[in-house]
Length: 171
Figure 1 (cartoon, rainbow, N blue to C red):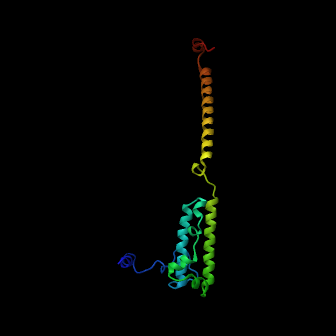
Figure 2 (cartoon, rainbow, N blue to C red):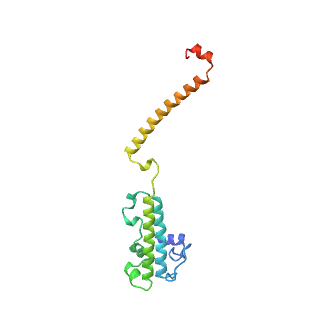
């Protein structure tokens, strides 16, 4: 019953049968055949993995390679085949494997760039570093306030008329 509803809701067209937009389909990826479906699945997973990479910036988020790399098993599962025949046993498998490796290499590069990007802000500092920074700023603030008060006092004295200074006993 749910399958019928999904088919009715989504239509008869599978997302794998639609041509990929934005990228020119290589000659070995024939639309509607296993090579084309595998190509489309790789593109689909590439977009999902890029979203994950862009949304995470800590090294601990990338401990498992599954989160940022595409596996041959998930591509095969997406198109309903086994990975061995798709990536090793047919004429397009060499080109598909090259494309698959190229996509994974690009995902790895993106991950490295994201992890090694210089971090800014307090959320990336340890508790001790934040504490030291706050104490230093507090000391600086007290020093600036003292200097500011002394400057204001000096300016007040220099701008005050002589008769008022005599009455106050300042000079």
